[in-house]
Picture 1: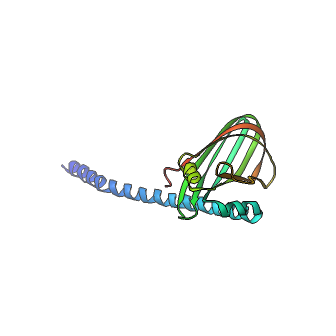
Picture 2: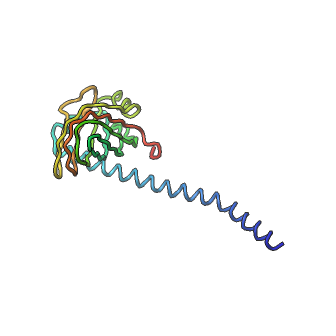
Picture 3: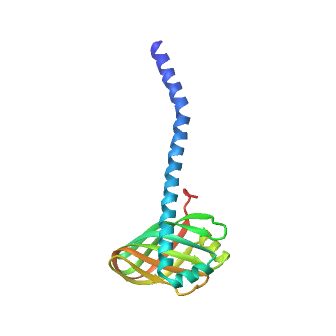
Length: 189
């Protein structure tokens, strides 16, 4: 009889504790997501401010942009290339943020690794909405990056988009055809 009572008591404790465990797990996950959003936003703000401080052209495009996105990325290449990162798209007028992911892959001649930030400025609401909701870009690319820092930049908007790539760290030499996909971060929005 005692063993049945002990078993039922243990079962009751587990049944009562399970919802609390789930609640605290959700709170912990929510806290981590808040930390991730804060980190992404900080990196984006620092990259954007650095770019605007260093480039009058970027300043001019930023003033005329409806919105922008900043991604913190990495890329590796050894014949084939791949990489990815996270970022945030910001509607300047509303101040709203959409957290996003980026993935890239390609084939061609390439060797090395690179960490960089990508700043994307959207000229119009339509370009911004298209980027946030569809976010697809495919391009041919040739780069050579070495050492600590470098910037490659757009001089104007093309199809409503201007791109700035800020090389942070790494050594990379490549000439490849790269496909890049941007999409909303399901867990952070």
